[in-house]
Amino acid sequence: MASGDLVNALTVAKSRLNGGMKNLNLFLMPMENGSSPLGDLLCEGLRREFRVLAFTVAPPDGTASAVEYLCIATDSSQPERVRDAIKEQLWRTRPGALTRSTLDEVLQGRHEKAIREFRLEEYGIFGPCKTRRFAAIRTHSFQHRPAFYRYRVALARVDRMPEPMADYLHALFTDCPNHLFRETVFRASAVSRHQLGVEIPLTRVSDHDILALAGRSRGFSDVSSGHENLQKYFLEHDPHTIACEVPVWMESWEFEDYPHFLGTREPLTGHIDVLRREDDGRLGVWDYKPHAAAEHNAHIQVFLYALMLSLRTGLPLSVFLCGYFDEKDAYLFPPAQVKHSQG
Image (tube, rainbow, N blue to C red):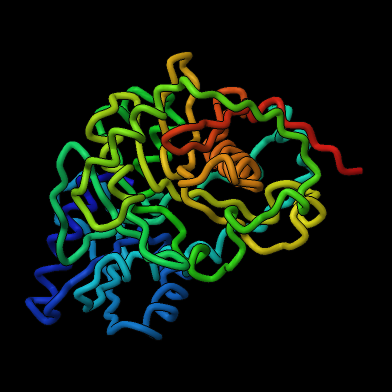
């Protein structure tokens, strides 16, 4: 898509509407041969929830391209809800994925993605009725089951991440499939060690720097939630912390024995408490547990987080370190050393 053409088309679309919508959100899709079957399908879905107007716009004379665009205008004061509805409709039109990859191949780093990650910008451009400014730490609230999750990212630190990880963390603000998190009740935190046939080499340590950070965070009271205070403290006082409450997911088509491994075809979802750059260069996938020593399934939870993050980014499990912690104890393992023991 030519970005200049899209900017011009947005200008034309706004002038055509002439203030006819109080809270105007626009989505522009390029047309082929004067038609857009996918755009028509999208309009049909959006009309179940929003007031929608659709019309064709062309770039002004003298621009480099003669591409026409389908302009889909919605009237809503909740632009993120509009964006979610657009994503949900387009998500369901993706081509079916067939994979012969197995869990063992994922664990061994021999997995190949069946389809590309969803990016809304590949379908068109979304112009919300309002935008928010953000500072060095950008925050986005996700209404996911069973509550709101505040995803926070230290933007300057993200840019020093491996490119696939940086792309993923930035894309979550606009491309996270929030409908998956609202529809499924299958969450990584609810999976028990008895469900999974994996062997995890867990090590307890009492001298990791994350313990001192957790201890100091107890005197930090910026918000009402203790869990969220810890996360904010890490982002503001630990130069190694990259992001908190990072959404992750995987779907049943991503490896062939998914139903055998997890006992369902439902999507699996979760939120990583803390994502850090460790001293040895690995990416730490951490979960805070107030009574870490009493946990029985936390290692399963963080292993699934790393597995989902590997699937989403294409990075091998060898670049990650997994762990859970409180103020006294941390329990660590390298997910690349996890073995699948089920037959």
